[in-house]
Length: 321
View 1 (cartoon, rainbow, N blue to C red):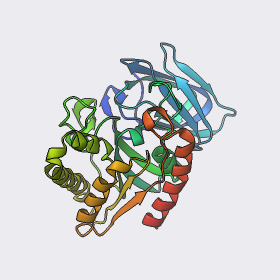
View 2 (view 1 turned 90 degrees about the vertical axis):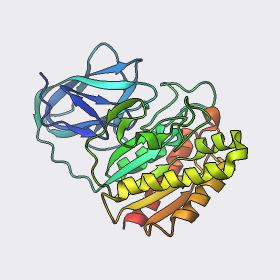
View 3 (view 1 turned 180 degrees about the horizontal axis):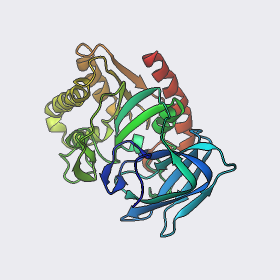
């Protein structure tokens, strides 16, 4: 059986002899001394992509598609290296199982230190939906959670991440999910929206980032006669989401982000929520991106994500200084 004691899971996971990863941006890390390692990841129900990142350098990464064959990664020298294996596909697409990990050398005790811990709740804006192409259909080939602005910013800031995101989902409801009255709020105590498996490792974080509301707005526009009632419910559930995390850390800082897709018709919803919640939470912040809508289904293209990533890094530095 694979020795798991020196493997550090990243993000939410399920452990039952093997590690299982659902959300985009989740995965595992280990420290190795040797000439190579072999990783065997199984993706269900369809194939998927993962990244191998060497020595915590975002720009030193290799994208690999899972297959029936284990993937061998050679290291340039017989030195100590930190390896991150990160899922590029979102929870809606597939689940990764770490079947096996072996090294030509040894896996050392994991001693890497992160600066802060950040939790993220989001929709397609966090999942990297369709960001690699200007046209066509979103798929595992045209979407990429690791190149998403949020993951990139947090990774480069040396943050430990816990991301829960899924395309089409609102905070409370959405025009695109079935049923339409199920939102991310219903999964805050689960590993992901793709499973009812509970998350039993809830620990405090330093910063909570929320990028939700565009899909809620689509649902509200479909039910415009109920707008006032639905907006109130959205704000109430937004407060519930914050309270779930704030009870673990009374000094929790919260950042609401929007504008990534130039979703102008939804701006009122974010701003109304902020106006109501700001007097309740002293450490509540909001940031609007100029955004972009030139990728698939009016999503932001990958170059725009790179720009937004730099912007987000500066916002986070200001908040956490």
